[in-house]
Length: 174
Image (tube, rainbow, N blue to C red):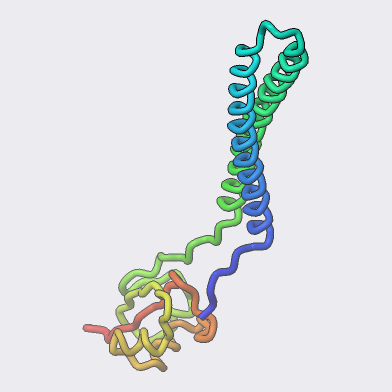
């Protein structure tokens, strides 16, 4: 049974999103840390405001506040970039999503020429689940494996896929 594999482009887009998320978390950490340092320096400046040597310290606090504003701006820009990347990934996944198999097979009717050429039988369908084999499916529905294979000529038993539709033939009640 074949397992669906993600496209390398999808992995790349997810990696970009992960990197953007890491940068966002790092920026948030830096902004919180800078905010704490500014508050600490503010309290020191207010304690020693009468001292003339504190002028340098006030300039440092001002510079830190400016850096904090820059970090907040970077956080905002990164959040917007993460949203943009998430939309790109979502659109990519939507446009590259595998099409669901045709579920138009109904009892006694089919749009597939290969199935309609079979002897008259009623037909049901079965969606392949994880771990299924054609042998298991035939046994589960009490149908000989040869008839199951005959009813599904386009299916390669070695390449079953989850949610793939298998036609289950039953004897005609006519």
